[in-house]
Length: 274
Length: 109
Length: 150
Image (tube, rainbow over all chains, first blue to last red; front, side, top):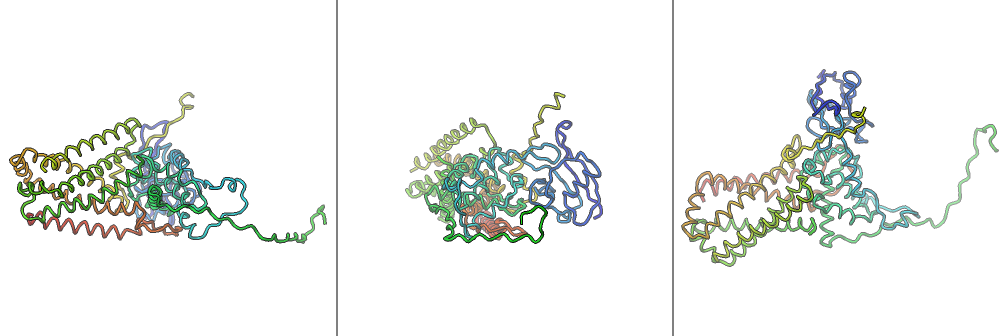
């Protein structure tokens, strides 16, 4: 293909009552991503086109958009993989549109905050004045590390059919993060997160459509996290959850090694003490 | 009641319905005669085992269906007051339907 | 100046109920979610009608038999078959959902390595087996109860 057709959603809140589609034709280059196409449009065709992007390598999560009817990161989507020369780009569904392709993600961040996405240490004294590092085996790490790769791009929320109707539903990303922290052996706040998830608009409105895991660009698999969290909540209800053993800490060194002397500078600087 | 408790009941009733309705269909169709024939119906109506099975099917089925509908309605982002009204309405409809439905086999027994 | 200083409210963009049905370019589990809802509705409607039909028993044999005569219409037979299929789909898919909601059959979390394969994709063979079972049972019910007239 030599030319690409971009059908881009446009919306200017100062001028438009509702979004409309604008068509652009741009030259194709091998290896181009959707983000490259949008940047080309902005630089050469229409500099009023608005979209978010930052790292351009799939790590910041800024450029989430609906590309050919699937939520994707624009920087992470090579045009050749789409196998079409017509690319439809719209703002992420289930998030309000600020302008053009820019979605308002503030509700995602509020819901994310509500599940306490941080380690709540069982021993506050140790947490505030740590004396040693926590020890975690590889197996213990693997219980949650997959869910720690989340970049908060919002693609899972755009894909979720429950988020489509229920604005109070926590959503795949916050629930997956609730699982990530509850599964971490260093954490003691699982029950608080269970209370937040076990509500009428909480975890039980997830019906395992699986679209969130399909849309996730980082392999986080939020669907798996949510079902594991459901299992933990039910196990806790039925008193089947094993009592969490407090995380072990590294033993203090039996003997302190002597300080290594700083070697002499090979180049003497003027004014330096010898 | 916590949502997780309601969900555990949903799973229990689902399992119960699977076996009881399966049994209801298999036995109805494998027994001799037409299952909807008045004589078959009258025969099953006087059986304590069938009565118990019908009551259980109705209890499990109505709970499972009403809870499913409740979940669906909760996803519609209704205001809190409407959700409270909806919860009580579903409960009353469920009890009323159960009452009517269970009256039929009990009356025949 | 006043208009420019007013903060613009972002335009709502939820898919709404269309988001339940529209499965776009997603895979089979997303369609099974929609099918599970539809079969649930269908079964609930059937249960209501079934209770009304059974209620005719209260008025004796005559009332019962005239109800059964009315329901022996071919249209109702098609409806009964669809209800059977809906029950098979809802029950078997519900069994899968119950197991997976409780964390079974999905496997354990592991550090993601590109190309990412999520738990839904890893367990897709289970879904194909489920669909094969649903198809087999639907054909069996069609042959045994509808065509042979039991």
